Length: 601
Image (cartoon, rainbow, N blue to C red; front, side, top):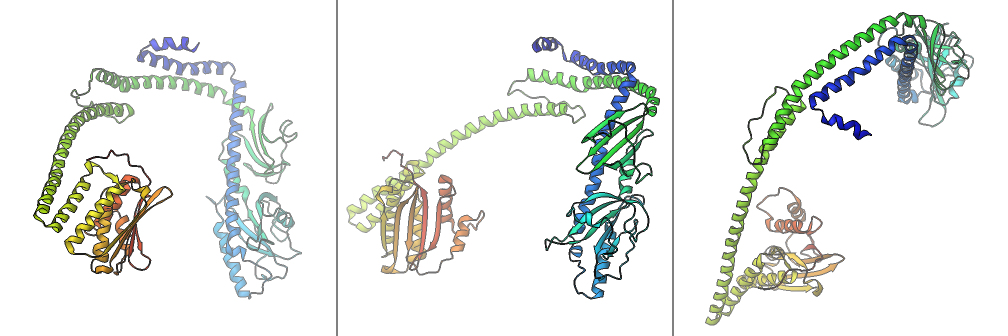
């Protein structure tokens, strides 16, 4: 079914599809205009009512946000140390009490707020003071004034205990007067008990926010209803705030909006008014819209004309959009399609067309041309890299000839010196030849531990012959791990350090011990010397781990550590520590592996 509908659309070109899109966009407006003219009155009532329902929800949300803002501010005030440390039972001197009272008074005044003189709300704190510790404070609360008021048992406001019983939950409450001593002035208040949060028990007092009706009325007046009225009431329809001045009165709602007080929004359309009532039992509040039907009907003809104007404007706008897209979208895309069909990799790319804009089409065209140029560049780059790779391979073969030639020459010198009877010189040449052979390792980077130890033995013998060293070397190698792989020339720099910085001048007392063993899945190789010099291990670890160390120091051991990291990962490498009994110990950690190289000369 869907494919049958889509198939004819596929056959249309882009111009025809745009015209079809324009007709599809304008058709609903034409239909809506005709339908609205036929049933304007009924639809008007229902749609306007639905709009008022949504508006009512948003309005209620704004009011709750205002109340939540007051709640957050009251939380801030309650948590203030000045409030929490207030006590009417301590024995502080009068001057200290007066200073505390004055500081709290200033705090409450600072939180009294409003965008204008008509929507200012006032924060006041009512504290039970049975011993009259704060006798100097006024006890005549005023609606339009923030402050701290202390009262005795006889002066306790009628609402005080009911607020305390809410255990810190704030809520709106209408009051004819704030207390028996206060002026007779109606006000909507937000009341909340101030509990002691440090001791976890006891009530310090009650925070009262007066003139809440002015703040809420400002939110109500921000909604424009044609000759309508807005009320915020409690569940008994007592007016808490409104767009007209009837604070404290009861309003009467029609049947259907009153019965049962259902949770949520209900709307009732009578012959004279449209009622939208939003009930919230959790907050104990209702938001009521009362809109005269007559005012809406007077606007019916005007709305018809507005719909007609919107239809014409929408059609003209759609035509302008169609023309714009045809000129700014289709022409560049047609040229881009022509270029894409014509282009072949490697061919010259013409200059990128410029359309004088930075929209997505221009970005697409520029990116396509740039992509073609990059493709040409990659083709050229790949060709050049292949040439360089061949040159590098040839150069590597040339470089391998010289070390082999030197190794063969050393073998010839060894046999000649042996025939001449100079055994010690012959032995040195033989050890040097071994060093060259193992260093070449047929181009391998990884060799067996056995080969590396052979390289180390040759190096030690060469050093002993060269410098007449008489230090002792001991090797304790687990036979099972001799086939384990190790980067070549790993141990020689470490042993060289042990000789030069450890046992060089110790004569026969010098000792180097090389130990290798298997521990779980790792191979550990220890090189110990009994040298007597002090070693700065922190400096060594800095050389091993620092990203940019001094290149003139510690290059050998850093090179060894980095090569192990490159082959096996950062969890392997070398570490230095003091040797038990004196001297230095370096540990080489390698992974357990099997030698899979093919042995041979």
